[in-house]
Length: 196
Picture 1: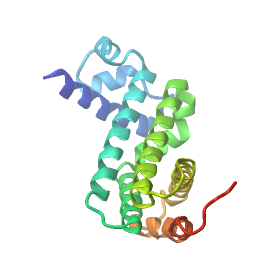
Picture 2 (picture 1 turned 90 degrees about the vertical axis):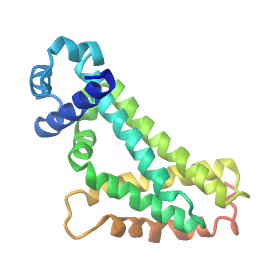
Picture 3 (picture 1 turned 180 degrees about the horizontal axis):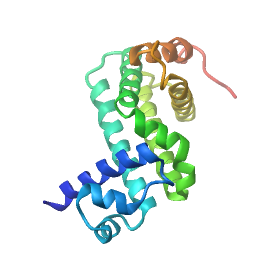
Picture 4 (picture 1 turned 180 degrees about the vertical axis):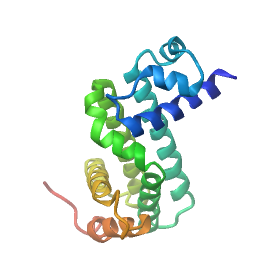
């Protein structure tokens, strides 16, 4: 099996086991057994159990970026871009529910590298948002674009914590909740500039 394919297989199995047992209770032995490789091979690829968790987070970050960019491709308005991007984020959470819970609850236990990778996810999404906002609101100061992007990422993350596990809220519903709370501020951003 080619290395890249084997690596993806290891990451998929590790993510499954981390989600089933939690990071602390998972073992490299069990991951290796389920993948059908030796434990030394896992260490050769990832260096440590934390390195394997970081690889899981990094893969999720890559997938989230692809989902977000695909969702906003060809949009014609800032409102449409925001709504589509938000919906893509919550659909991503839906398709990665077990991993989301694991990361939310246990990444801090894993170590600094895992926490740094989670922060990289936040920075990535903030960058995407700031770029989108800039394309539709070109007169806003860079500082304001960055601040609005940070606000949206923070709001989305907190709402996702509330949203996961609920049966009465869909991904489009969650996106609409954020739109109602945040959009009016962004829509008025070109009319009212912050002078803070």
